[in-house]
Amino acid sequence: MKFEEYKKLQEKTYEYLKKANIVITEEEKENIEIADFGLNDIERTGLQLVVYVNTERVCAKELVLFPGQTCPEHKHPEVDGKPGKEETFRCRYGKVYLYVEGEPTQNRKCNPPHGDEQCYTVFHEVELNPGEQYTIMPNTLHWFQAGEEGAVVSEFSTKSMDEYDVFTDKRIKRIPVIER
Image (tube, rainbow, N blue to C red):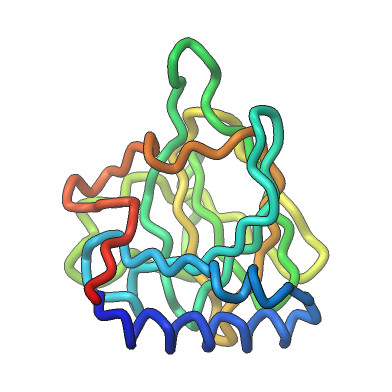
């Protein structure tokens, strides 16, 4: 992703945080992470993040999704004998559809991005509106997609080690590459 595009997406992300009445510092604004997962299709598959804290025991961050944007299917595996990340998502703005392991939902509201359907395997739907939350246990396959307004979701979790996430789509690169 080009640096100029990255900066524009950071500004767009900041606007969504303001819609959710979430205040961040200038430093946090500068450090907004834009994850296109190496697919170069950010409007369909991507995620924007603000990390507040990530210690050996806890993590807190904001996840921003643009309208219809999907965070691809993945899980947080055990790392060095320690359980994978346990995370709670709490919707702050918009609507987010979370898909987890379990009985597939009939007539679900969202579908995987067109052309990538083979990379999505779990379809139990959990709809989160502002003020609602859901906890995902370690090593659980999940993916999520924003509704038509986009979404802002607070994540509270154990230590985040995103570089170890296991994605169903083997093309994905979790850590963004920015071209200067």
